[in-house]
Length: 87
Image 1: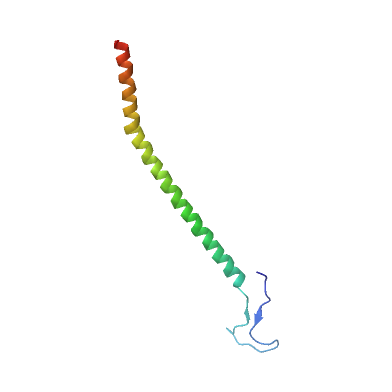
Image 2: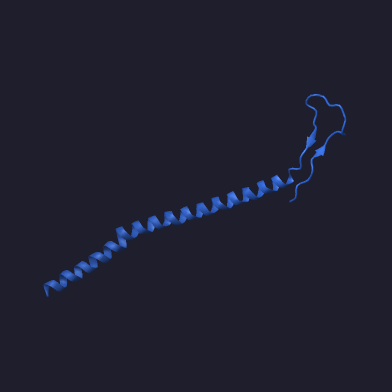
């Protein structure tokens, strides 16, 4: 969005009193940028939440593997090796 010139509330040369509203700037470009930045923040937060969920799932899967499946497979292999040594 392009910048617009300010909007003056009173014609040039008008006497003003303290606290009179003198000028209004067009804030539409800033408001649009703010909306876009909020969308970017929300998108980034969603990606972060998804990444944390994947990480947490991976930690659980690793623990289950190391304490369960891996131990079972290791024991099976060790039992097979000890059986072969006896024969």
